[in-house]
Image 1: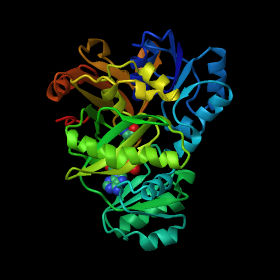
Image 2: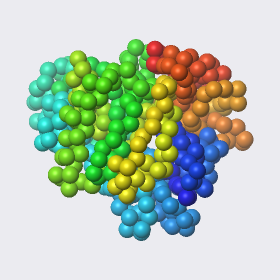
Image 3: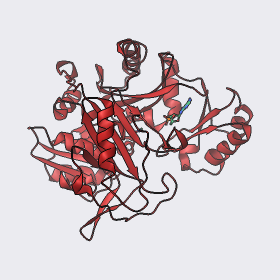
Image 4: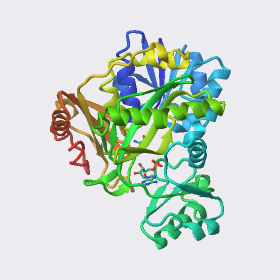
Length: 415
Ligand code: AMP
Ligand code: GLY
């Protein structure tokens, strides 16, 4: 098979790394890819959002399966466009991608099917929103309805911050049209967990659980990022919680989708908040998580291409997912300044000295034969070992061998 992976981050590097292990695969392309991906796949210079160019490429290069990494191409309808041309994509269609494209859409769905989630209200008028911003007390959670690259959620400590968040999103349009509507939510406390699931329209199969670290600083403080590290499994997930998540959340999600006529095939990322063993849904993403994928795929023993084909052919029920009992830890090395402004093109050294770790590239590029930084999150240093402590030690031992000017990473991932 010839496979095309769409995207350029650490998640896509992990997908390429895993897909490459399939005996079915002859050639892997990645659009646009990065300097690390280029060692495992042929990178093609097409933007992840350019659906027409991607479809043209897939036609010309006899691509058997295209794997959609980021949400942008899914929301733009890559699956629908490819289907029109008789091309196969792993990733949900545009109607299903609405679960990530609109937080209000997801909240309405969760409420309709009585799936546990934070209380909410939605507003299209900033003055009405301002009048109600304290409805659930403080802190208040204010979210731009649409896509905002993970930055559209503001936790406002008091009324002053809430009013300014509403202005920022709805009046100053910091996230463009994504802020035409906001969702105001009750603030939930507890511990977060990410559960990525495979769906084939008929069944929903969770992968092993993961934990993501969203804040930039140790101790979970500072602004939200795309994710500074992950580990899998998430120790919160004992058999009882797993069962509860399945029966109270995952089964009703599938049943609700079927009732709504949504034929969801692909990966659904279910973000959960867990307090006193009680799970509530925070959000859905319609794709693999980044950096959850880096640690979860390190533990997947089953051929990922088999699973993706089974999802598309509604044969997921025939596949058994095998997981390593070992733990995986991914620590992200970021550019100094991220998630605010940061400099690029810093030369990265020491990559060749790592041992026992898989270094997934996120924001890297090749410049004059050097690998240089090219994004906020630069690398995801990932290890698998007998237990989490050992995997963590391996990741940090290796991270110390790599350097670039301004490099920053959290010291408390998987602690
Ligand atoms: P989301 O993109 O909706 O997952 O929000 C991003 C992050 O904001 C989550 O991972 C949480 O850390 C936080 N968050 C979102 N919604 C809530 C909520 N209702 N209560 C507390 N924290 C939240
Ligand atoms: N790590 C969270 C996300 O992929 O959105």
